[in-house]
Image (cartoon, rainbow, N blue to C red; front, top):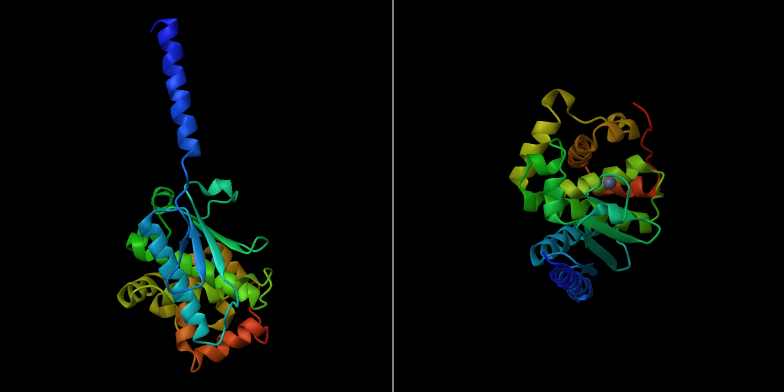
Length: 232
Ligand SMILES: [Zn+2]
């Protein structure tokens, strides 16, 4: 390529990059069934996120636990924009908002052991939105961030409650074998969560269902009247 032709090719490339960078972002979506706004993402992602947020809000409201404020969610192509750990999604307590990877990113970065390797992608995506929404709800309800096992218990129970029944049953069967049931409260500790977060979520879901009054247990947990252990 001659120097003038090269210059004009470079100029065209630069213009394309600048125009792409200036392209207006899609307008944020106000979720229809829950007080939340989603920034970025495809139509499918936004609809799954709104559904997951509504699942968690409904699950917890059914136990009298509400957030009392709207929630903002941003969809990212690359979660490294907002965190330095390989998370699919997170609740940023300081900014009180959810950050979630795009569905493609979740599928591309799944480790082979996580949810996206085990169940249908849209159900997995909806459920991780529910998980993080539960963190957002109970954080405002007063569960301190350092009460990790309590936070993850509620988030795990809400996440599994958002899954279709057959999927939830198959997944809990795969993650928590009969010999580990009924799930003991002592098993729901921070150490197990750190070692196997998805298994912890399944155990929390089963433990919640085992309770004669699951809502009463959840309320005691949120209030701090029940304390989960740090170590086994
Ligand atoms: Zn969590």
